[in-house]
Structure formats: structure tokens, C-alpha cells
Image (cartoon, rainbow, N blue to C red; front, side, top):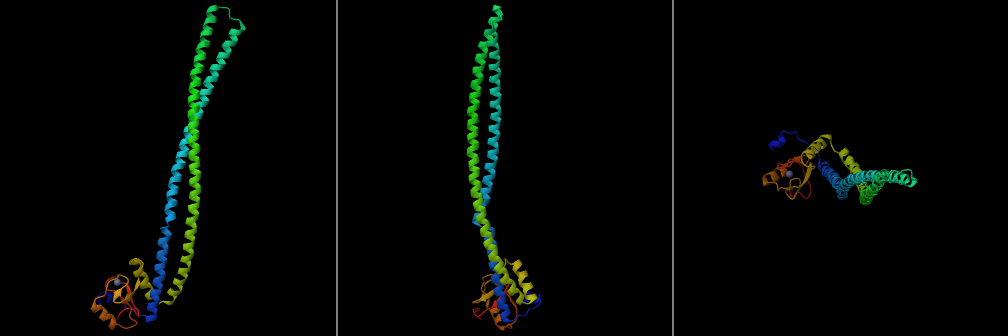
Amino acid sequence: MDQSSREPALKADAFTQLRLLDLQEQDTRLGQLSHRRSHLPDAARLADLNVQLSRVDDEVVAAQTIASDLEREQDRAERDVATVVERMQRDQQLLDSGTIADPRQLQSLQAELESLVRRRSDLEDVELEIMERVDGASAAVAVLTQQRTDLAVERDEVAAAVAAQQSEIDAERAEVEQVRAQIAAELPADLLALYDKIRADHGGVGAAPLHRGSCQGCHLALPPNEIEEIRAAAVDAVLRCEECRRILVRTPESGL
Ligand SMILES: [Zn+2]
């Protein structure tokens, strides 16, 4: 075993080595819990709802801008009509007062009145058209605002569900972490350090049982010469898989 000779040979009794497998079990559970926490289906839905909500928010603002622009346009059209009506009333009063005797002046005043009537009619058409557009824009704002309200309700529900799922996982994780800490406290520091280092470098698995001649870390069958070496090794020798370098723990099911 050339590779292992470069590292200090560790010794640990059989029971301690089996406890390392218990520790691995807790770490595997912690890894699964972390994965579950970061892959909650509702969290993906929540992110999607937040995107939709932000899009509808923008749409509401855009629709409100269109509506308020049209309302200003409507005000302007109303003022234009009022100005013409005032002018017509002034002209009509002047006509009715009988103070204008000059026929040419009278004719010109009547012509202006007729032109003002046409102008008022045109401006009222414009005003009517704008009012219809204001109604359409207000309806669009109402529809979008309702959509936003509905989405916000759904988002809040899903957010609450995600928070509940997360806190459930966190509670489970706290329990597992407690068990892990108890097991870790029983193990010698050098063995624990080696296990943690291998675990960090090998996808969360630092120790694996030898099961019927196969390493359960890399799931490869050990070659016969290696099995022979393991048979010959001392009970308290800490073994490593030649293939994956994980700590290989002998159990009654190892097939030795
Ligand atoms: Zn292996």
C-alpha cells in the first residue's frame, strides 16, 4: 500500500471504526436535508410567482401612466370646449343686447357664432373619443390591479408554505446535528480530521463499509490481492480504499 504509506498510519479499535459509519450516516442525512432545503418545489414556484408579480407591477405602472395621460388630455379637451362655450355666450349676449347697429358688424358676429358652433361640435367629438379611451385605460388598470392582488395573495401563501417547509427541515437538521456532535465527541481527533478532510474532497462521503468485498464509497469490488491484504491487516488498522481513498470500515458483512 504505497499511497497510504505517505500518510501517518491511523489506528482505531473496531467499535470506533463502526462509529465512524454512524457519523457518516448523520452526515449523509445532513447532506440530504441541505439538498431538500435548497430544492423545495414550492421555492421554485415562489421564484416564478415573484417574477410574474414584478412583471404585473410594471404593467400596472404602465397602464396607470397611460390612464393619467389620457385624463390630462380629457381635462384639456373639456377646457377647450368651455372656452368656446364662453365665447359663444359672450357673442350671443352681445347679439341679444341690440347694441350693435352696424349690419356688417352683426353679420360678422353671426358668422363667428356659426363657426364657434362647428368648433364646439368638433371639440366635443374629440372629448368623447378621449373619454372612451379613458374608460378603456381605466378598465385595463382595474384588470391588472386585480391580477396583481391575486398574484400577491398566491405568492404570500406559497412563501408561507416554503417558510414552514424550511423550518421543518431546520428542526430535523438541528436534531441530526446534535446526534452527529455526540458521535464526533466519541471519536479520536486525528481520525475525525482525516474523515472530515476526505468527506470534503469526496462528495460528502469520508467513510464507507466494505460490503461483500465491495467498497460502498465507490461501489467497486476490491481486487483479490487487496482483500488478502485486508484479511492480514490488524483489527485496529484504519484502512483506505485503494480506488477512492475513503476510509474503508470492516463490518460482519464485509465478506472477509
Ligand atoms: Zn472506494
